Length: 264
Ligand code: ADP
Image 1: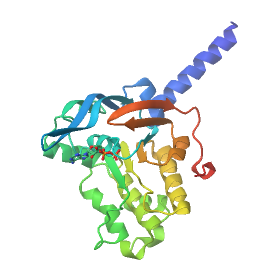
Image 2: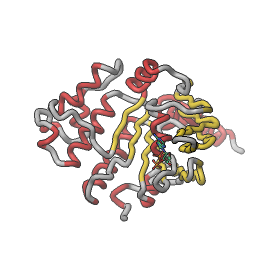
Image 3: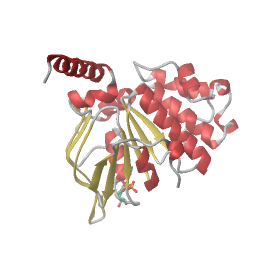
Image 4: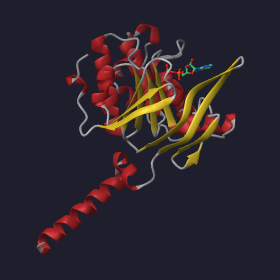
């Protein structure tokens, strides 16, 4: 190989390594995975019966990726999200997030973990009806040290002019935008979305999914999105399918499709 092309190759490697250090979307490639599930089970006791909501799951996730979780009802999708979100703890196994084992944390420690590391977006927007839109978003600044500016977040979701309104004065799509702004205002490393468009019509769903796609690219949060909608696998970097508490497939997409180009 000629010296000049060896030099060019080396320079490219240095540039890519630099990007990986500075841009969260790349950090998982060089550093540790942000999320590691090792042999994780969550078993519910219902009378004499044991319900295995998750059954010995192993899963490693790289930072900054968009991961879509698919599976039929009862497959264990919400259980997986709740465990990663620190809303629940596994019966056995370990869950490591950004180097911290969260599987055996106390209630207070889990609350601190939730406040600093994860943002939640649910199908029901869970806004506080007696607070204005801005107050709903600003609320997280009281629990999160590294919070972002609420007005900037409202601007990012296209609601700068709605800050003084109450949630009841907004459409469903607008309320979901507020809940996304609220989740992002914590500046979370992980954004968990559980059927975020379950209550929305087709076009509003597309707008919300497009927004989630754009915030993932802009802020580099690792996004896990649970959905029933197979078509949404095309917008992901990675598609994990669950059934009966186990992972039945785990695929990486070479390219992410724009939400606006996906039909269902
Ligand atoms: P999905 O989100 O894929 O619909 P879930 O994670 O909600 O699935 O549930 C997985 C399984 O665990 C289901 O069989 C469900 O009935 C059971 N399960 C979930 N939560 C509880 C609970 N609190 N008590 C008993 N069983 C539960």
